[in-house]
Image (tube, rainbow, N blue to C red):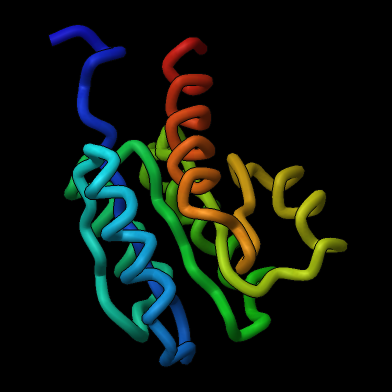
Length: 138
């Protein structure tokens, strides 16, 4: 199977104390309906747990949903752990309640893209497809 026709594998994670997961479940269903292979890790995961799961599941995208405001602490830790494990080829996409002012900084740290809480389902699917396509071209 060539690289371009391979099914996109996504791991979705809720990291930290955020206990609200309705949105991420909708995103998971949207991505599955678009033909992606999706794993959802559940609530209250640590950065270490989600990075280990992303590596074990051999995903193309690690989608991290944050509503708690801890994105500027959690995302850099996830990126550091991926790099430490030699898995920095996994695209990290952040989503949830993230102030516009932090989007540019997250991208400069290595986040492939940021999807805010008002992102439409079609936009989410298109963003993940574009992120994976761009990475495969490198």
